[in-house]
Image 1 (cartoon, rainbow, N blue to C red):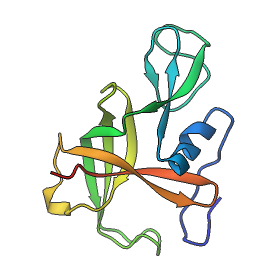
Image 2 (image 1 turned 60 degrees about the horizontal axis):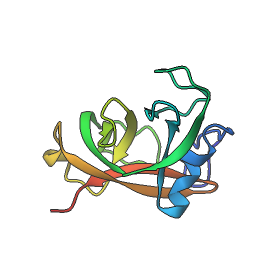
Image 3 (image 1 turned 90 degrees about the vertical axis):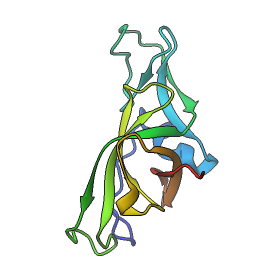
Image 4 (image 1 turned 120 degrees about the vertical axis):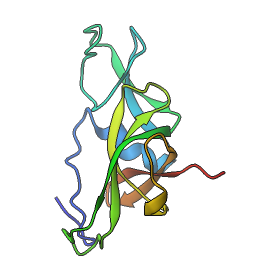
Length: 137
């Protein structure tokens, strides 16, 4: 599904609803196992660590570090003029939980592995897409 901005929007499922809508409340909601307390992403109905089915979305800190990134220079969609940064960020709450995202409000030449970032949300129709920006000094 896409919208007027040209952005391709995710299909929201019952398991992913909290993740895609938490941003409307300014919250990064990540699924968490209620048994072993591990964070789980992408959102699924069972914990891959302990196999518990007792999982539920919880509010994460929204703080992360850049684990990997690339700078896109190709004009894939008119709504996204290049260059822009696509990054994998690891959550401070649990570094083995990673999200693929775009970095915003960033000088492309200053991006580096380990850069501290924080979540911001791009509200589109019925989803609030989590992006990350550098943490203000």
